[in-house]
Length: 429
Image 1 (cartoon, rainbow, N blue to C red):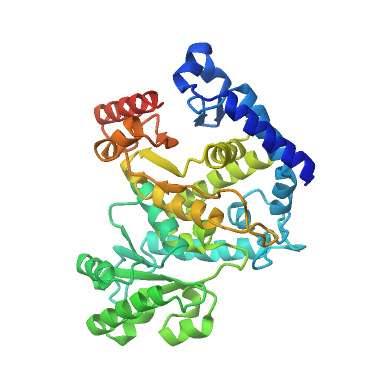
Image 2 (cartoon, rainbow, N blue to C red):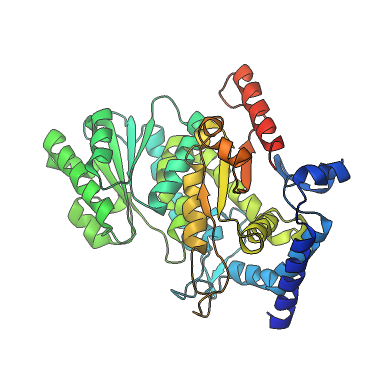
């Protein structure tokens, strides 16, 4: 990137910020009643409305100038080309290949990864579908009723979030559970809820050495062996890992081991075999729809011009608030109870990715990086912390998420939920 152009873009935004002092979002709407028509994007059935953000046409233009000066388009191209954009570990970050259903090759440092991705995906989905439909059964010959995912970090947050969000697609004969905390209460409470005779455990640990995961796995194994016998372990456990020797020593059969690659960061891994819990729960066709949704956003991110690019605009808004206005928090409020784990999922995605104090060259940064991400489902948050958001002295940008139509919920409830969401967003400063 050209340092001069970047400094020029930053200075222009600083000057513009001074011109906006004292203006409110209500002022923007009074001056531009049709503001929504300009500041929204539709992508399929997704509506991204950013008309209630603290910006105008000039702000948007200057932020786009900053993106270009920072080389966003070149960085995006490097990401999708499989270049080692993870400069700490000198690896690509090619998780987009995991949800690539197009048939196009994708390369990690010159190597087409799609043949191995497709092979591993097919292996995982075949197993998942066989558990889902009852072909693969427990040691007693009964079909599995409960699936317990044991992981932590990205091996837990993604599956936990997605399994809860997509619960209406899980048949009534299956119950999905997640265990992460090394606190014995987490696994202990789960073991009280599940019948071991019909429970399948998934151990998610790339190295099969993660202390929290392996402690919980060992306790679960002990419970199964004590209740069902040592021989039942092979029928009641599977693994997502790459350490075949350690897995074999645990007692898991090689045909029940599913892998992923070094170029998959944990916080992006739900699209890989780490999504096994979800694939078992919702079935093969729905899991492929889940992958397709990710691919659609990838395509949009690559092809849409920056001024109509939802991921780019969301990132620029985050930079605008954090680095120019010094706003240190960002709330994510899903008006959907099944999306309750989404803020926690985003916490890792944002705060682990951007929570750095040095730049790509290792030099200490002289600007702020990530905000603190937090959130709860609406309307619960309205009765907990919204008074501070509306009336307090600290400005907190908020992402409101709501479905236009309910899924497996009463229409009267949904109308009330939708009204609350729109009213709360309208009341923002």
